[in-house]
Amino acid sequence: MNLMELPSRPRLLLIAMLAAVIMSSGKVARGETLEDTGFWLMLMMEGSIGDQEQKPGRLRWWLDIQPRFLGNISGLQQGLLRPGVGYVLGQRTTAWLGYARVHTTSPAGASSNEDRIWQQLLWKPRVGDFAFQSRTRLEQRFLDTGPGTGWRFRQFVKVGWDLPGTSRFSLVGYDEVFVNLNDTDWGQRTGFAQNRLFAGLAAKLGEAKAEIGYLNQLIDRPGPNQMNHILSFNLFLNF
Image 1 (cartoon, rainbow, N blue to C red):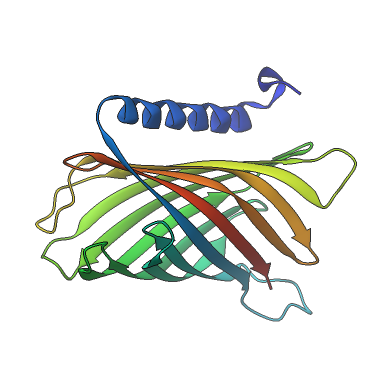
Image 2: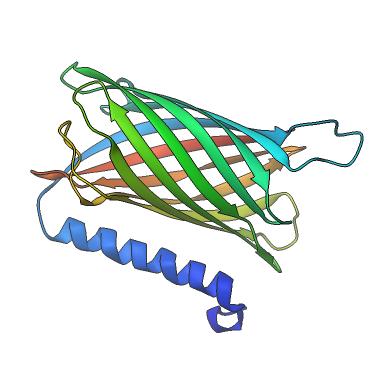
């Protein structure tokens, strides 16, 4: 199956991913970039609210926990806890509302706490051996380092391809673009903020699913940009 054979909506997702890669490559080319290595873990849990012995309801819950190690994997730089509730709009579409708590420690030892309110629309179509996912998220960010609400837009596009001859393993790739929508006193600046590009292998483990691969994180900064080369391991549990 080539790109032009895909229906219009999945084809647009692939085009969006390619555009994000081109954008991030351009940012690297325009200036000096500092580099680091890291290891990120994510435990992602999702389930229905209500009695599963009867017809599943439209309400869902979400919780992801993420410890992130950077500084050449020398220590825990960031921890994230993100609960949420969702409402099923259709067979493949869900709307979500949630909260996130993020604690960050800089390489110099300074720490900050961030509270977020987030809203997102999640769409999961499938075409043959290809599983797509589009996640459009809006965040309102509050940091203890200064006043103001930072509004941020995030667009995530993911593609999985089932390997021939097996229903257990698949190749996975995703890209996520972050765009700041306003300036704040605590340092957020309007415009492109960061890009995350991932490629790896996924495996079904009963009702669970695991992913492992390489994550490239490019962060736009006032001085040199930051590029992190990350080993990423994700575990997905559905209830």
